[in-house]
Amino acid sequence: RQSLHIRGIRCRRRRKFSSSMHRLEDQMEIRNIAIIAHVDHGKTTLVDALLKQSGSFRENQHVADRAMDSNDLERERGITILAKCTSVVWKDSRINIIDTPGHADFGGEVERILSMVDGAIILVDAAEGALPQTKFVLGKALARGIRPIVVVNKIDRSDARPDEVHEEIFDLFASLGADEHQLDFPMLYASGRQGWADLELDGPKKDLSPLFDLVLRHVPTPNVDKDAPFGMVATILESDNFLGRILTGRIDQGRAKVNMPVRVLRPDGTVVETGRLTKLLSFRGLDRVPVDEAEAGDIVAVAGLSEATIPDTIADPSISEPLPSRPVDPPTLSMTFRINDGPLGGREGKKVTSRQIRDRLFKETEGNVAIKVTESPESEAFEVAGRGELQLGVLIEQMRREGFELTIGRPRVLFRENEETGDREEPFEEVLVDVDEPYSGVVVEKMSLRKGVMQDMRPSGGGKVRLTFLIPSRGLIGYHGEFLTDTRGTGLMNRLFHGYLPYVGTIEGRRNGSLISAEDGQTTQYALFALQDRGTMFVDAGEKIYTGMILGEHSRENDLDINAVREKKLTNMRASGKDEALLLTPPRRMSLEQAIAYIEDDELVEVTPSAIRIRKRYLDPNERKRASKSRES
Ligand code: GDP
Image (cartoon, rainbow, N blue to C red; front, side, top):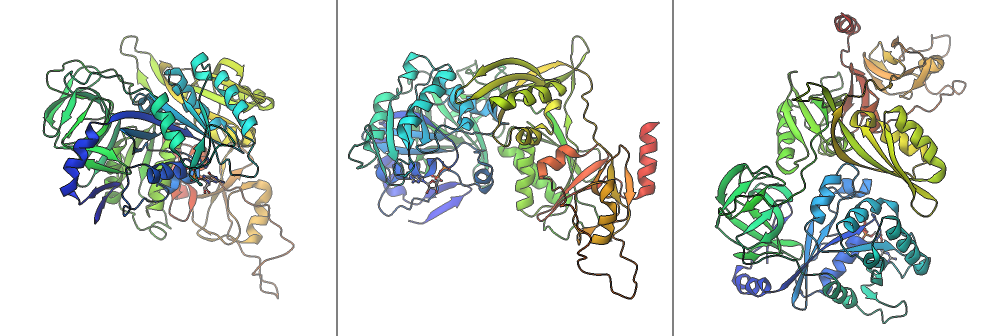
């Protein structure tokens, strides 16, 4: 029972049994459900327990703990970036459970994922209650007419307050516009950790069969035509070293057979390619296993195509019209990723060449449709376009952890020219904000400074309000951090691409000038102390710095060159070590996203596995002067 692990795909070597077993499973009824939960409310634990208790596992098969979220970054940021599918068998049915993304920059993906399911489990921690992060996805699910099942989880907690939480969920549904049927949701009390779910609080607490049974009763089987010619919409794209492009989606009609010829259609009807389904994989537990055939309603992954992407239709060649799909939101923002050519370059990371950066970026585009990479006119640099600074920030953070060093340029919004009118247009976003009522004023004020226009404002239960804005994507750059500060970390913001609209003019965003190091060396307490009243420092005493590095924000508008490495003149005593009299204000430390949003056009963020620094593009003061003169003229 060796298992071969190829980037998340485990192909088990038990072919002998597999074909007969899979034939049986092919005849099973299917249910497709999404699981919607706030991070830490117990999704992974519950799915593990479902896997263990369902018939889909053999005794000696290993259930990896923490099945669903594998990515560290996702956990830390409390988000799910990639949707994943797990499949469990119960009685005569197979239940495909799809994880939903909860990230602010991935609104369009949520809708695509939800288009594959007919039901949803809303999982809520019995002590914490319904948290607003799940609102966006839940709202989308309700709008699609899905009738969710509510699971109040972690009932074993001593601070569980199931009745109140039940009421909160009801209010939440109501505030999201749930209809009568949706408001009449079935609810279970559960402890995923102890492996039980019950309809009543004082139930037998035996196992999860009440949840399995409820899913079979409550969630409709997919409404599909199994006798039509084969057709599916590609919903998730991955790249695999072994199989190449893998596209996952729900079979909307007909049957897929391994090796069948298919045609791929863009949403506009263009034929992208014709080819064969060389591999057909169906979900079994946490694995995907090769099958010979799959029918409408099932969620499958296919390989063998070289051009198909999201949300193309993959279909029998007799089909000439694409199936309905939700378009991928276009990239609205671009950043330049360069090599780290600063004086400290290559000391902190292992992957530093432009070749390595290039390979990594192009690899990313193979599995991430929201990102586009092109060669930059600048040497040793690449233009990376995506859906927002948060999304690109996640990519940079991932690369950093893989050992890369990079310098990142200021994000630029992707403008375009209207073909008919010739007007300059810019991308707009619809932004949904959930905040405690007292903070709504500051949010409205900040959004309008950034040219956002409020479309709607309504109470959303629990003393919160939900605000809807239409705002140029440009206006959102750097706002997320400010938003969190303004709302004491309690606010929530989701964005959805709205469309291109005429350019709305400059947005006042000018910050003060920079305090720039005029020396290489190590900062001293003595020097920093003397510089404190010049502005806010980003560095502490004893840090390695270099000429052209930005050490702080000037209290005035202009840039200022400073000496932060100066030592106290030697008197009769050695002036090293800490000088108690010279107390420094703690420096302002910026996160990656803050730094990226902070820089001006002539500045860069230097990112290495161990540091985030801000620097001038031209480190040498003379070169800098020349460059700024040529910009002015
Ligand atoms: P996820 O982030 O939603 O996938 O949540 P996890 O399954 O990783 O669980 C988050 C935390 O809650 C972990 O520390 C779990 O041990 C704990 N947890 C999960 N289920 C239960 C439960 O039923 N009862 C209690 N008391 N804790 C649980």
